[in-house]
Structures are given as structure tokens and as C-alpha cells.
Length: 117
Image (cartoon, rainbow, N blue to C red; front, side, top):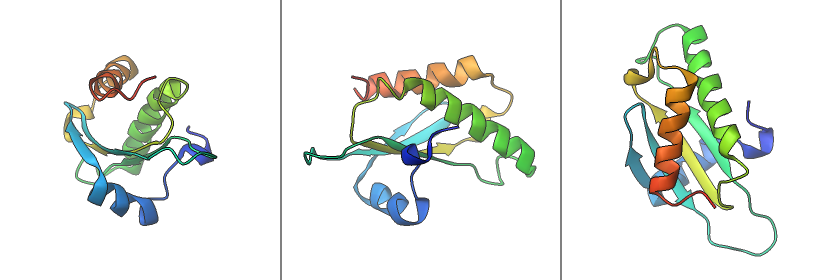
């Protein structure tokens, strides 16, 4: 699971990212993100995961997907540039995928948008 400092507060920050961010479409999820401008002192990365009941009605299945995504993103945290905030909007195609496939998709999106440092 991502550390609390690395998680977005969806209520407050999600709409700001939606308004100002960029949407990247992937096979298993869409990634909505923004890069903060350098402000000097404290800058970090933060991420959130949105998994609708349309994906799966069972909370246990949605939580499993969230844990897989969270762990995959956590493995890239040391490489992700500072100031990146993003929201993963999960698609139904993610059902049945394993950790390696999800991690590969995240890596491809991060590299495509030059988010890795």
C-alpha cells in the first residue's frame, strides 16, 4: 500500500487534477495527471485509484485491484519525478490481469509521458 503522504485526497485534489491535468488512455486504466511547478521547498508525488462498481460489484475484488495498482505504483516511486500527482481510472479490462502485466502498463505510461527521472 502507498504511504499516506503519497495518496491523494480525492475530494479536494481530484477535481483540480481533472480541470488542469492531462488524460492518458491505457489498456487497463486511464491515467489522469498533472505536474506541479517547482516551488522550492516541499514537493512529492501523490496518486489515487478510482475503481467503480461497474468494474466488479464485489468490494473484495475492487480492493484486490486497488492493492495491485498501489503496489505497482509504489515500486516506481523512487524513479517518479517530484511534483507528479495522478489518478488511475480503472477499466473493466483489468479483471484477471496479474501484477506483472499491470506493472508493465504503468511503466509504459510513465515512460511515454516522461514521468520517470
